[in-house]
Image (cartoon, rainbow, N blue to C red; front, side):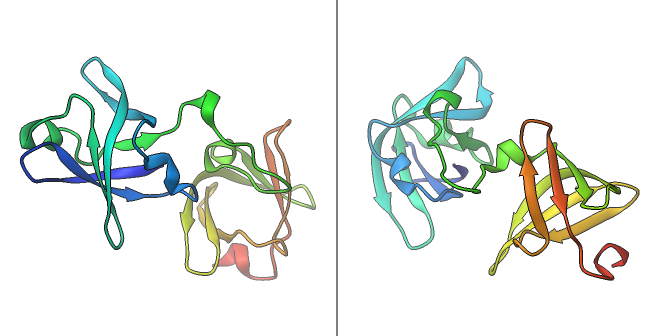
Amino acid sequence: MGRLGRPHGVRGEVEVFPETDFPERFSPGSELVLLPPLADKTMLKIVGRKQKKSSILVKFEHIDSFEAASTLRGRGLFVAEDKVMKLEGDVNWIHELVGMRVVTESGEDIGTLLEISRGPAHDIYVVEGDKRYLIPAVKEIVTRVDKQNGVIFINPPPGLLEL
């Protein structure tokens, strides 16, 4: 959902950099999973929100000081698995794809999808095999995703895997 930034003010507000298509998840009353957890706190409940240009100031329940907010910096916020929105069509969540094998349509094993990097025009799949590959996540190249068997099929244009 997002990455926590620096504390803001003395009352425990913290800056959040959203990494989601559903920014309404940062509304008061929402509960988000904090990773890595903070001592015994895994879930954080939002009690206040202020929109900024490229970030959101969030106030969490029980985080009431600059010092407490400082302990959150750099941590990730996630949605609990049972609250993940269902996507339609051939759209997938990043966590569903990371760890899958990447194979060409002709059967050549390229490697494992390590991460998905967001680009201005499209996502980039970072694949680790005998070397690291950067695969544009476009329909012409990523031809299908077999979630049941954990395989992403690609049809790379000439030269892509040699870069």
